[in-house]
Length: 564
Image (cartoon, rainbow, N blue to C red; front, side, top):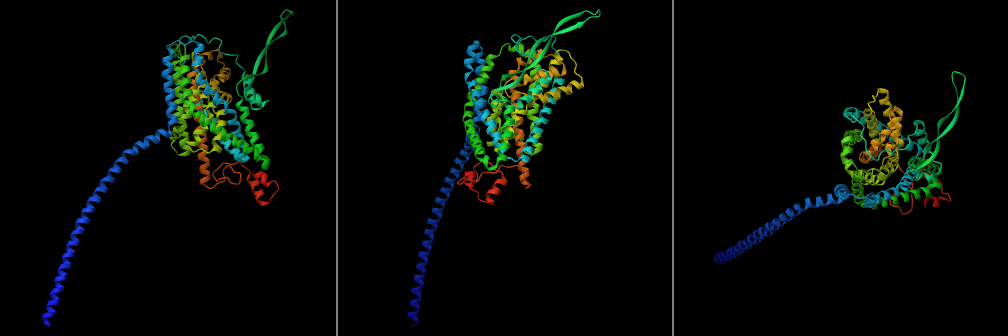
């Protein structure tokens, strides 16, 4: 029995040894399979994934570049249009085109200005009516008051910069004789009296005909009549003479009365708000009209680079006596442009940073397309549609702010015009060797700030109001012909500064509203119509809060109609 037990143990040990060998073999397979496979698969996969990371790392900068180009394509095209326009203008200038050929050559640029002017009236009127109807009277007064105060202070600051720069650079000194530029002898109309100029401003605020205000504005003209006048000499003889008297007579001149349209639109919007539910349909109409107009603006923006290219080229081809012009008036041009750069690149961004604590140059990049368009068209009114589009899409300014503030700014905010008018007044005084005392300097500042409000937002609009300043300080208005000679260049930088000030004003007001909202205070906001099926983020017609409360409080038979 002991032997049998021994044999059984021996057999069992042999089986265990065999099974242990199998385990060793299985372990070897695992080593071969697991380790080798892991090495092959793990290493290969990591190498392949590393290659994918390398290729994606190469693609990321390319994608960023493509995204940057795609996001700023319009800006790139607009700047390219200006550069190409300068090159084409300098090249075509050598051909010596006739006056008629220059007009034909500039036709694409003329088409751009016509397109932009075409939508000014519907854009300004509809945006202001909708904006005024959306804000209660208190909110409207507060926002409008802050905007007017900002525009007034920046315009006064620009006027101060213009006077200081003129006294530092002294553009009129060193000219022994007044530059005589041919073709400018009959370029001016008869200047108006200061009183009549300000009365015309008030008359244009209240137009007698809204239809004619869309293309004509009021302007006082003078009619000379001869009145018999008896003069008694020292011997008692009576001599009858004819005395000429200048009588102001009403007249109208070509040019949109934008100031009157702005005032009417604001008052009309307030009246619609007072109507309550009865005015909802008309407010919805103006909102829809405004949105459709902005779609047209987005289409026109893609034509802008091509049109600006021919505007710049055509203006370069038109230039005559270039070297005589710059040799005589080079210091004046330099004084204006340096003043515009100081105000536009230092002071306005500094004011924006102080009030908002945000990067002002990022804000400037967002409106760069509109600034280049302003330079090409030399019209702040024509740039208004593009400026609205830029500040809303790129700088986060709400539609309520931009479409209410920017049309007002395009009418009353003329920083660039005020600056150049002050420089021009001091320049003419220096040119005629007329010293200016402190009272005259203050008069120039105040008059330039006030008269810039009535300056038309059209090319050369500021020159028309320069006569008011010269009359106020007793300077000869005949010298304005020299200013007109270089106005095609100076006016473009004026327009850029004007629209930049408008945009910064909208940005500061938007920051003010955001700050008030973050503090939980009651701020000005649009209340939307509760329409069936409307998404929360869609813009509807504004309603009065108390009207909506009354609708919720009791059901009236007109509820369904008013809601729709």
